[in-house]
Length: 231
Image (cartoon, rainbow, N blue to C red):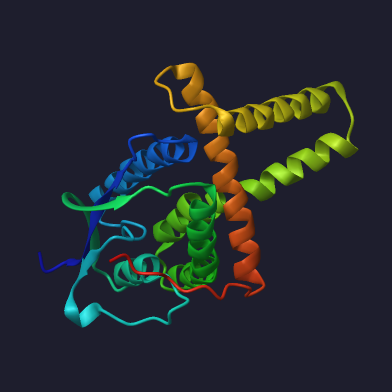
């Protein structure tokens, strides 16, 4: 117990009775994120806490500015101080899903614009303090995922400028996927796998568009919006 510096809980998101493509896609995303954090918890190295709440040893707590993501940065700093960061599924917070794309986009761009600067600082500290596995986590769990829209953009540019049967096929596949995402935005909630696949493709595109904007805002320091606490 003395080696534990932080304990992270899990957030259960409440879906509205009607539901929509954003909420369905977010639900799948959060289930995957919870699974990854549970694996990290077995190693005592959870990479960031739930935004709902987390518990920290009093002597390890440090305040950050309002434009820094404390739920991400503080647990990582505690891990680099030599303490374990655990994940406890029995500690539960509940919050509503994003109501629509606009609300999800605001929340996600704000989060990433705050955290992208923190990520590079933490990565620098992790390498300096020889926490190489933690550095690997920061790259694989956070950075690569946030960079997905830039990888997609590079892929599309390659398809346009390096014409060949292979790149034409890849371009056609991408256009078909984007078309399915557009259809997913229009389809109502449904339990069939067919409809859910359209919802997943729409949510994937929406999340990555928000990541793209969030990184640009973070790099160019365009983020001015503060976190609005739920009451």
